[in-house]
Amino acid sequence: MSDKLWEKIQEAFPNAKQSVPLARYTTFKIGGPAQYLIPVKNTEELQQALAIASAHDLPYFVFGGSSNMLVSDEGFAGVAIKIEMNAYSVADDTVIADAGVVTAALTRASIDAGLAGFEWGIGVPGTIGGAVRGNAGAFGSEIKDVIESVQALVDGEVRTFTNAECAFHYRDSIFKHNSGIVLGATLKLKFDEERGGLKKMMEFLEKRNKTQPKGFASTGCIFKNFEFTEIDPAWANKNIPQEFLDKKRISAGWLIEHSGMKGEKEGAAMVSETHGNFVVNTGGATAAEVKALVEKIKQKVYDSYGIGLEEEIQYIG
Ligand SMILES: Cc1cc2nc3c(=O)[nH]c(=O)nc-3n(C[C@H](O)[C@H](O)[C@H](O)COP(=O)(O)OP(=O)(O)OC[C@H]3O[C@@H](n4cnc5c(N)ncnc54)[C@H](O)[C@@H]3O)c2cc1C
Figure: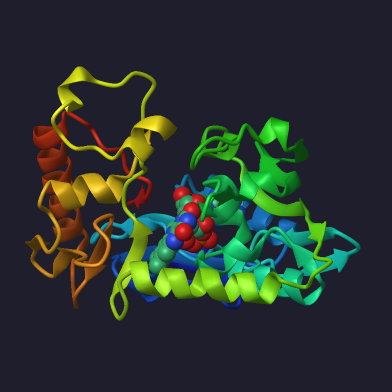
C-alpha cells in the first residue's frame, strides 16, 4: 500500500522525498524524518499534494524556511509540504510576492526598487508565507504594517484577505486559526525619496549581529514577549524596566536573563549567552533536549515573576 502511494507521489512530484530527515531543512538542524516530503511550485501542485494526503488519510503540514519550528525527534508521520512558490514583482510602490519568496530577498528587491518600509525584513529568516502567518516583525515594525492583502487557500478555496481580514496581532494572524495556507501577499510600500533604504538595512543587520547569537543553529526567539493589561502588584520589587511596563509588554529575553537562565543547558541545547530568548543547538541537540530546556525556562520564569511564557515557535510532530 505505502509503496504504491510512494510511486503515485513520485509520478506527480519527481522531486518528492521519502523518509527524509527534517533536520536537513530546519534552521535549528533538529528534527526526525518526514514520511513524505513534497515540494510545491504553484497552487495547483499544492492542491494536488493536499488531495494525495487527504485521499490516504495522512496528516500534512506546510513549511517555508523552517526557521520558526521545532520538529520532534520522531519526525512527522505524514506529508511535509515545502512551499516553493518563488515569484515576485514590483510595480510602483506595490510588491507582489508568492508565499515561498525568502523574506530577506524581498527586502533587498524592495530596496533595489527604491521602496522604503520593509528594510527590517533583512534579518528575518524564512519566507513571506511564514512571516504573514506569524505576523513577523523586528525593530518596532511588523509585516502587518505593509500588507495590503493576502491570498490564501482556506478549506480548498483560494481567497483574498484584506489587511483587516487577516486579523493581525502580535505574532498572530487569522491563518494560525483557520488553517489557511498562505499563497502570496501584496505589500504596499513607500517611495524612498532619499534612497536611505540600503543604509537602514545595514544598520538593522549590524544591530542584529550584536544582539543575536552567532555560529549556532537556532530557531529564533523561542517565546513571545509577555503582554499584559494590568500591572501585577507582585512585580513591585522585581526591577522590571519602566519601558516594558509602559508598553504593557515585557521582553521574554529580559525575563529569561533575569531568571538566571542564560547559559543553562539540557544536553546540547543551551540558552544563548548573547540573547536569553534564543535556545541554540551547540551540536547534535535533540528536540527532546530543547523541549526539556523550554520547560525549565518556563518554570524558572514562573517561579521568579509569576509569569507564564508562551512559545512563539511551532511544534511539529
Ligand atoms: C536567527 C533567527 C532570527 C529570527 N528573527 C526573527 C525576527 O526578528 N522576527 C520574527 O518575527 N521572527 C524571527 N525569527 C523567526 C522566523 O524567522 C519567522 O517566524 C519567519 O517568518 C518564519 O518563516 P518560515 O518560512 O521559516 O516559517 P516556517 O518555520 O517554515 O513555518 C512556521 C509556521 O508557519 C507555517 N507556515 C509556513 N509557511 C506557511 C504558509 N505559506 N502558509 C501557512 N502557514 C505557513 C508552518 O506550518 C509553521 O507552523 C527568527 C528566526 C531565526 C532562526
